Length: 330
Image (tube, rainbow, N blue to C red; front, side, top):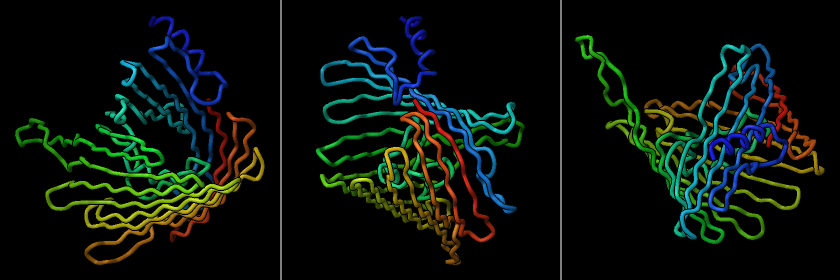
């Protein structure tokens, strides 16, 4: 069985079929693989931003499912990404997702490296065409050692997650022996809900909290909404964080996105991303993100697309930039 499965998986990595490709199914078990090749470059002026230069990666993933009973099934997912530097000697490999779980009549339970619950809200505006822009609401992405519960009741989806602390520091005890001590705790719990109405409106909210040290607590609250009608999609999200990005720093962030599908193959998008940091001691406020992004996307077919985005950067000392990329997915 292992040999036959391997023989099916390897050729499918280069298939042109859109979406996850089912490479194995024996009625009780199934394996689907998917992937993406992204080739991009960021052009900016003399004050080069953090995204300047090459922005390319290869992403491969697999979804597994196995039926246990008529109402209970096991599932797993793994996703690996190779970030390609300008040199062949310095690629960066990272595991984006790696989790397993059980799906039942009372919801899905999973554990591993996965998206936390509040991503349900932040994803409403995390829809930039390129790999360079968006995602500035706060720490609302993937985490290790995360337990997650998800369920959907009619139009309402509810997610809850808890990340277990796995941070340690290595220090010298003064005699030359290296010992492990706990550093800042990265345990965190998150709750989120999204409700989709019949006429295209989705409303969402999320909350996340943690206690990095005994000296302070941190939290973030998110609100979001999206509306789709015909070729138009409008979305907005707001985040208010209390020391969530670090001790002594509050932040406020919001994102807006408007997309218009001009033809079946061509669409355009306008994004606005803003984030303000406030020192809790001095009350000094600083704009850390202030982006107005204009993007266009052309789909040759369901697999291949080309995208371009121009960003007007409102942060002092930062230049505007232009991002161009091609993406192939299966």
